[in-house]
Length: 357
Image (tube, rainbow, N blue to C red; front, side, top):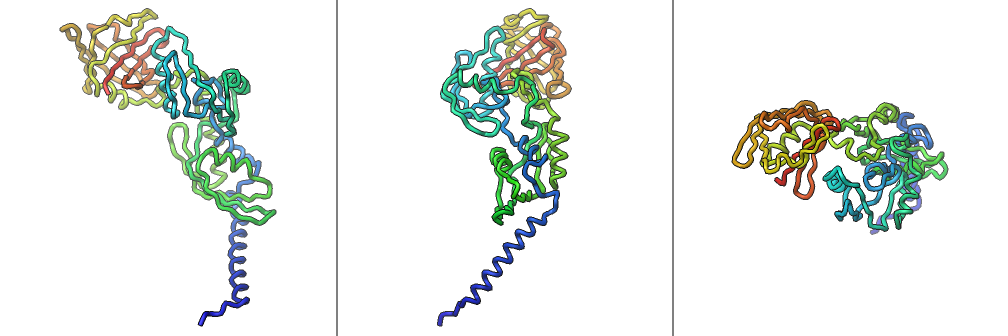
C-alpha cells in the first residue's frame, strides 16, 4: 500500500522550510556590524579602488595609466615583430629597446585591439588616433589617480547578500578583481552584505596579511594602500631590479661560462669593443677567470645589498676598465640570450651577455 502524504504533511514541510530560510535571513541581518558591508561606504569605495584595473602595467606600449591593451596582440618593436600573449611578454619589448641606447625606441601596434578601462569596460580601438584619444583622458606620469596598486586581495572571497526589499538571499564566490569591482559597483541601499572572514591580502613587498573583519580591512588599505611606488611613469627601466637578489645574480653568472662584454662605458666614453674576444668566467668562490688569444687574467667579484641597491665589486687587475663598485641595474633573458647590466650613475656602464641556456 502506498503511504499517504496529506495536505497537513505538506503544510508542515513548507513551514519547516520557511522557518529555516527566515532563520538564515535573520542571522545575516544580525551579523556583527564589523562584517556587514554597506553600499557607498568608505570601505566599499576603498575595496573598489583596490580591485580597479591598473592600466600602468603596459605603459611601454601605450603610455596610458588608465587602461591597458588586452592580450594577445602583435607589435613591432624597433622593426622586430613580437607576439604578446601574457603580461610577462612585455619584457621582450623592453629587451629589444635596451639593445641600443643610440636609437629611437618605437613600438607599432597591429590594430584593431581592445583596451580595458579602469572599470573593466572593454573598448575596441581601430587605429592610433583612437588610442591617443583615450590616452589623453588619463592622468599623466606619476599624477595621483584612484586605483590602489600597493595591495591585492587573495581570492576567492565569499559573501552573502540579503536584499531587504525582495527578501532574497544569495551566497556568492568572487574569483578576481573584475568580479569584485562589479560586485561592489552593483550593491544598493537595500542590500545587506556579509563578508566571510578571514580573508588575506598581499602587500607590494610580497608580505601576506590575514584580515579578520571589515575594520581590519579598512585599516590595512588605509595604511598600505599608498605604501609603494605605483610606477605610473613611462620609464620602463626604473624598476628593473626591484626584486633582484644576490642568489639570483650568482646563479646566472656562475652557471654559465664565457660571458662577453657587449656594453662598456667609462666616464661617458665608449669602450664597447675594447674587450672583444674576451671570455669571462665567474666562480662561486668569488673569483673570475678571463681568457683571450691564449692569455689569461684573474680577479675577484663580490656582492652586497639587494634589489636596486645591490653593489657588485669587480676587481681584475689586468683589465682596469672592468673594475668598479657597480650597481646591478638589470638581469634580462629573451630568446636564448641573457644580459647582466651594471651601472654607476649615468657615466659608467658594463653589460655582460651570454647565450648559455
